[in-house]
Image (cartoon, rainbow, N blue to C red; front, side, top):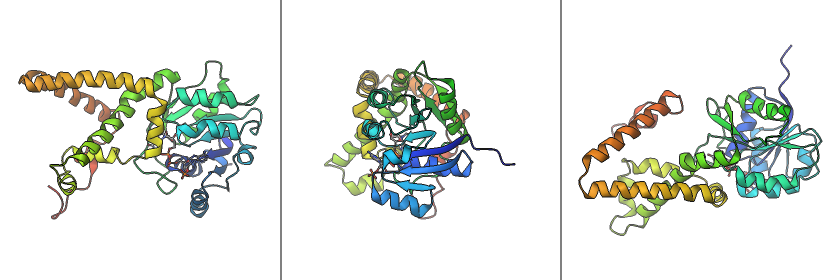
Length: 312
Ligand code: NAP
């Protein structure tokens, strides 16, 4: 007899890149017996139905979550509080609420006041994504071999945490737990500040008067091109990330600015030793990431080799 899926009814709120990837994976890997898709946008609901991503699709969040054992908020972090308010009192006792937001402290503060009696909130963040958005962008293996960080409250019942863990492990992720504050500090330096740097450098290049837009695009084979990939990430999602993780981002940005000044000084004074020492240390970090299986070791990020007419 086939094994019973760990989750009977899974309700997903927000069927963008992350929500639709969870839906695809949950179905493909047998993680949930039934999937209910909830999205405020009629165009998204239409696509989700056309793609056959869920057993049921609805715009009514309260009704959609009512029979679910696990409800996963996959909306931008700035919308988590409003959705929690909309489903207040509609989840059944014993059900678990979770989310996928890239910031945890602000989501915990926004969602917790709306929790109903008997419902446990186990926040989460799959550290996986792409620069694309919407239900067409998702794919079932997005979380495979990637980390998923859970930030359960200290008094969360083990059974509730185990249900959320079962979802992510079923999707192929490796689960780790930490506090929301620690999560926000770690992600500020590993994800949020790098995105801010990418948005900034692409913005600066676009504003340069001496260099035309077509030159920026034409000669983007250098490091710039990799920044443009990150800087193409969803504007709503990233606006919310920076507004929600303000303190940790500003703290890390302060340190970044100090280190950048030290680098500028080394260049000004011809201190090649300092530059070489730093670049050697950073190369080791890259090799560590590849060794952990979190990135491809292929040259040029595994992009296809340029053809005869491709860029050099
Ligand atoms: P996305 O592709 O833009 O999808 C978000 C979906 O939520 C859209 O369908 C959006 O509808 C819908 N939505 C927005 N507000 C809503 C509301 N109040 N009620 C119901 N649905 C609503 O975004 P995503 O990349 O999947 O990101 C979703 C969450 O995942 C964010 O919290 C983000 O921080 C987190 N995350 C993202 C990544 C990544 O790389 N993208 C990685 C890890 C975690 P509209 O079409 O109308 O906007």
